Length: 203
Length: 254
Image 1 (tube, each protein chain N blue to C red):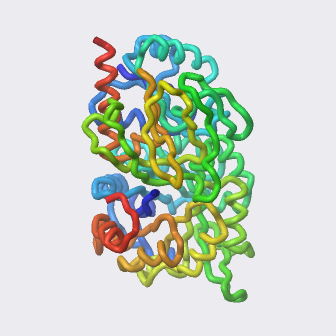
Image 2: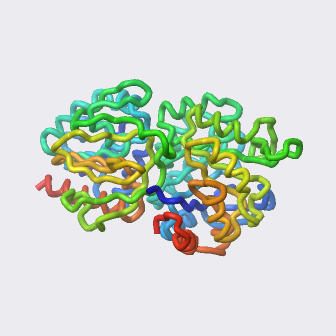
Image 3: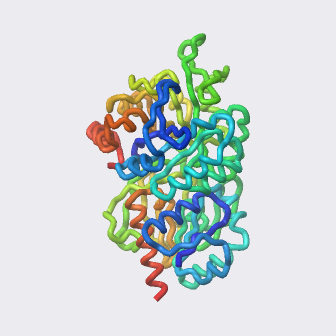
């Protein structure tokens, strides 16, 4: 069972709906027991970073423990940003520190938020993108992004006047700045891939 | 590069999609969930649902609609209509909406934009502006509230710029003069607003031909184009719109 972490931020239902739509066993929960027994975790999020960190509260530790134990973890949007060390959105806030890097504002000189469909280059060595073409449009909606500095992380980029890290993988830890649950068929395929990865871990 | 977005708008009244002309003479256009799912399948980039029954008071029925839509639609959608509080925004986002639009409530209580942005991030906060050409001041537009029924003294361009500063992440700009007329967007209005803000602007009101969409993007500077009449009554498919724009060098997600 995939557990979508319910920590009182927006967008959680859409993620669950998408997993249900592709036929996955999914549960929305904030119970530590569920986090421990899940085959994979999804950390969704539509929120400001500081609000999300506070809302996560005591759940941070069991999530970090699960990720350290090798359990697949997928962060989406602010959930993706929470994987990193810290953010400067409305003050400085510390994230989970699972992937090295800081969450910083998209540089001025372009339309912000970065909102809409952008073409992401999908590296073949990130298994989350299995079966997808080398480039695909995904839906973004954000004003901050994770500047990945972790040498162990594989990165998928999109072009927004600079190379913007759109997705990241560090071993069992995955993050997408875009919203797969809102990216039509390509997004559903990505979630299906994550579900397959979770099944593999379950064996 | 970000693609330009094609956004069908579903005005919902008593659980039916309706479309009028200049906000009046409403005509039935189908079931909101079915129509939304169809547009999603056809390749729409986003959807907007506006509960036009609820201009003053937020209604629970919109939450139920959002829940049903979110089960079938896997592209982003914005919802609006009578939203007055951060708690209502929270409820709609939790129900599956990607963004929530506020209109009258933001005019009456501009702090709502800031509170919402600080809690949910500004990418969730859409400032919807219903604009009417001013009869007294040429080249100016008045902000109208309560589903366009009340004109204010607020200047649209100034309000858009202020809204951005307060926390709006996007502007849904509807020309009341052009709405439903199918005679083209008000690109003078679109240009004035897109020049005044850095956040994305969705042009709304007046789409009748494929050329109108192109003009709103190229002349009006819009990041997205919204339409209702020409999709609901099947003048053009989403694919036709995107192909037309792509053939003219506009980046779209085909």
